[in-house]
Length: 300
Image (cartoon, rainbow, N blue to C red; front, side, top):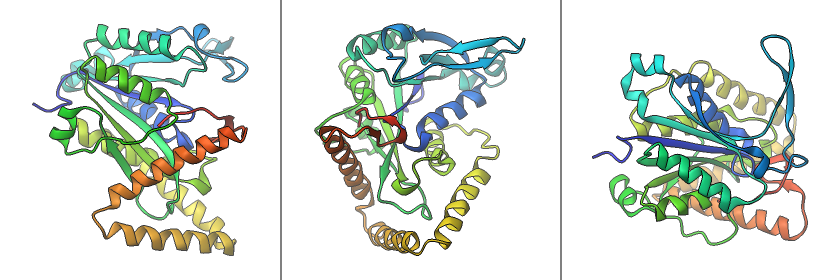
């Protein structure tokens, strides 16, 4: 039986796990395509430092100002969509902001939501910064700590040891509960991480479709990915140093792609990314690796 044939939960968090907002954007895209309803919410008051993860203000449909608090929401496809396409009824999405504190309590609350919805398998989405060129396909690394998932999907387990984020904490909790999970990590060019990367979002979305056996309407996402790449090309055309650096990254990427070790190369970039982030934390750096505008947090 397919690992993701039953109720599947797609999980993504904004923050350190989310280079160029790629993972959260993929989850939001899926939520839009599923026309989701929020069926559960983690109370933000207990888990977020609002000076660190600030709420935002907006206007509602009636023209009234409202506060939008950072949170973590469990979403399910709308009743209308499921009536039209029952096969999509088994897909759920957990989307939120990585919590600032009380991770063990947060994990316990999320696990209770997962068990209440009788989730059978979980697909984590993440994105990391890497020494990769923007001109090549975005690499997506898949790993699992679950023996069944590794055997069925021909995956490797992660051998990383070091600081982690909420995805890893949830992953270990799921494994203890006997719920298999797979983690998908997109490699985002580190020199363009300050803006969203639709190309990385599209790469994650395609992998989600492949694992779940579904197909979403990509809309304009492919065009956005092309424009993102072309925009960087134009910047590089006027910067000899940047162009030379990208050319070197392309050469390195092409060399490793010809070998069967391409997956290992992505894994090495992943561990390099984590170690570098840890060193920044030790040195007292404030920049979050996944988003230069936010303070640092840890994940894998």
